[in-house]
Image 1: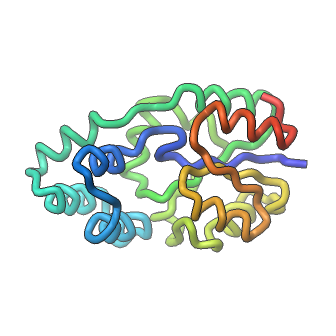
Image 2: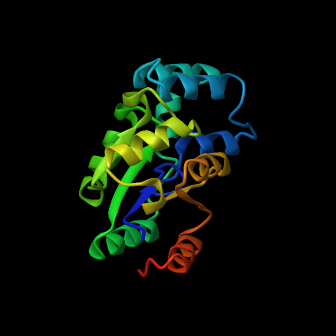
Length: 190
């Protein structure tokens, strides 16, 4: 029986500003962009260093980059409704994100999202990032559940595969309606 649902943040709950900017410019998260993200996710640079490095990689001034970055993504209200319904049904809801606290905290505050999660696990704070299976083991240990009692949803198939490899039931997120159907198939009525 499932007792918790673990959610990725960017491109599940909230659009990923970097992905949106890369796509708009015909670029991919590879080369310098991938390296900058990896350094942030593992706590190798702080958020200001991340933003400055990205601005440089895009060839923009810090001001140009900040304006475009902050206005490019929004919250998925349908996913928020799913989380609220899961909490109403007494499932634990956990946030697991590859990021730095300084990137995600303003978004959590702006949208009053803290109340939706029993725990928030940030890769830069724990020194591990998805798809490393260790971060999934760490998460289930921290929430005191066996991996088979948890469900994880992420837009990145590699992260879903890694979750599955440790016994968590991974769901590939493509839309809120698909997530709702996938959860219902598992017996999580929402």
